[in-house]
View (cartoon, rainbow, N blue to C red):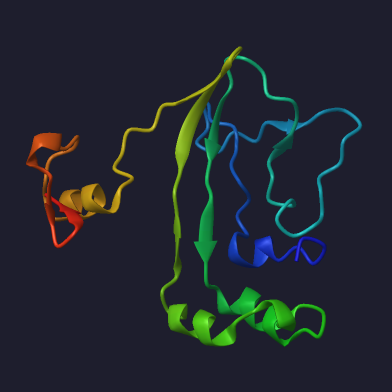
Length: 147
């Protein structure tokens, strides 16, 4: 699956980019480095070592795009990797992407994104609850968190 670059079938947009003055700061490529051409890597706007003070996005996602799925599911090299029945259930869904904006520090990074991540929190916010949610208002109903 890795050799066939199948990750790019479901996540063609790349993993993230630098964040700065422009929404999608290009970052550029260091002298002597060429843009990667492989699916999943060609969307990268930069290839460089992260440095303290940089802000980057981390954007994992999963999309169901016929223009990418159909050729991969029909290819003799890759068809065996797909459960077409399961994928068929998600046709028309589109996809989902979770983005975090991360500040790189000398000791690691800090996720600066403040948004709901748990199902109960997302459902509550979508239903009109304020964010951040008052955790005391969450209770269990039928074994599942509710707000």
